[in-house]
Image (cartoon, rainbow, N blue to C red; front, side):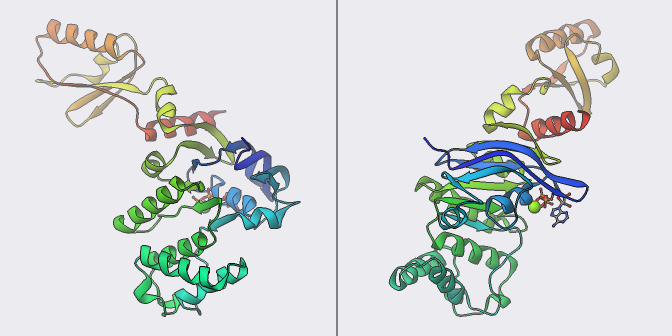
Length: 310
Ligand SMILES: Nc1ncnc2c1ncn2[C@@H]1O[C@H](COP(=O)(O)OP(=O)(O)OP(=O)(O)O)[C@@H](O)[C@H]1O
Ligand SMILES: [Mg+2]
C-alpha cells in the first residue's frame, strides 16, 4: 500500500545550522506516527516542510503520493496542520474562523455549519462560538485550531506539540480526539518532546536529534532493543557500598537511588543470583528486589547520547 507520507533525504539549512539533516522515513496509512525529540531537534522544521510552509534545500517528500513541491495543491487538500504557534484569526469569532476555513476548502455551506457545530460541541467551545478568538485562553485557542484542522476531514493530520502548555484535562481531551479520528481512518503525524505522550498515542516513533533520525520503531520495540538498560533494584537491611556491587559480573553501571541500589545489566537473572550470594556471604538481608524494564525515557536518553558521541 502507498504510504501516507514518504520522506527521502530531506534537508534544510539555516545558514550554518542544518535543521533537518538528510532524513528518511515512511508513515503508513492509518498510523499515529510520533516525531520525538528535544528542543531544536528539527521537529517543527520537518512539519513546516511537509505542510508546504517552507521549501527544503534537498530531498523529496510525498503525501499519499503527491509530491509536496510539484503537486502542492493536491497535497494540501488532503492534509491539515495544527502548527506550533496558534494561528486562528483573533479578530474573528470562533464560528467565523471555522466558516472561513470551510469556505477556503470549498466545503458546502450546510456541511461546514454542521461540522463546525459538532466540533465546537465536542471541544466544549460551542457556548463561546460568537466571541472573538482574541479573548480565548491558550487552551481554548489550541482547541479552536484543532477544530479548524478537523473541519476539512483531512486524510493526514499534522500536529506540532498539540498538548504543550495545556492542563491535564485539555491534554487528555486532545489525545482522545486524536485517537478517535485515527480510528476513523485519519493518519496522524505528531511531534512531541513528551515521552509518555508518544508512548500512549503512537504506533511508531522516530527519535530525532540535531536534525537526524536516531531510531524508528514501535514504543515497545524501542524499549526491548535497547541493551544495557535493564536493571535490578535491590535494598539491604544495612548500607552497602555501591562500589562493591559494581564488581558483580555483568553489571554495567550502579546507581544509588534513595535507599535502593540499581544495577544496570543485560543479564538481570545472573545479577540477581550474584546478589543473593553476596547477601549470604556478608550476612545481609535483602529487603526489596525488583527487575526493571527500561522506560522509553531511558531509551531516548541513550539514543540521544550515542548520537552525540558519533
Ligand atoms: N527560520 C529560522 N531561521 C533560523 N534558524 C532556524 C529557523 N527555524 C529553525 N531554525 C533552527 O533550526 C533548528 C531546528 O529548529 P526546530 O524549530 O525545527 O526545532 P524543534 O525540534 O521544533 O524544537 P522545539 O521543541 O523547541 O519546538 C534550531 O537550531 C533552530 O534554531
Ligand atoms: Mg518545534
